[in-house]
Image (cartoon, rainbow, N blue to C red; front, side, top):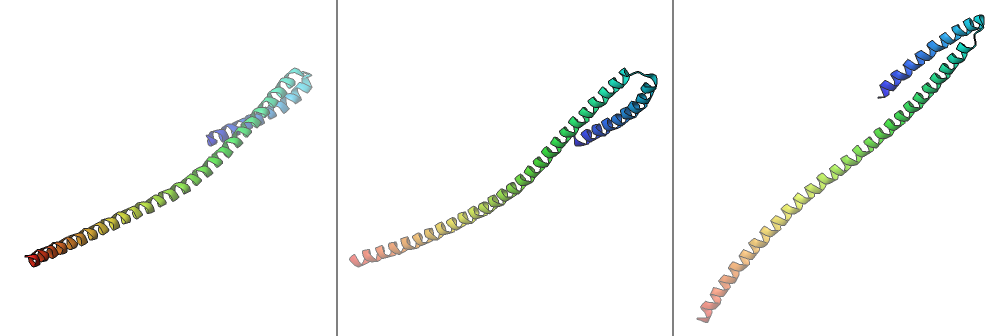
Length: 132
């Protein structure tokens, strides 16, 4: 879009220069001929073209500023996204570690429970034997 606007701007500038050349040539000829109407019409055309060029330059500047702002916003979003993605990876790793630790603790507790249960059964058997 920017390239297209540049091309249009250059095209209008070249047309403006061409009309300026035509205007200067026709001004000389109209002075010689004494005709003022064509000069007025050509000056109106030149003014209109100048206004058109100015408006296109303003539009181009606005487009350029918008593009720059959007590129900066995109860079900012990319940085924020990469930070968030890194945090998510860290949290996922922490979650896996916590799950592994929890599973290990459950396994140890089950083993201790089994040992205590076996001890209780042995003590219970001894107590029965002593009672008998």
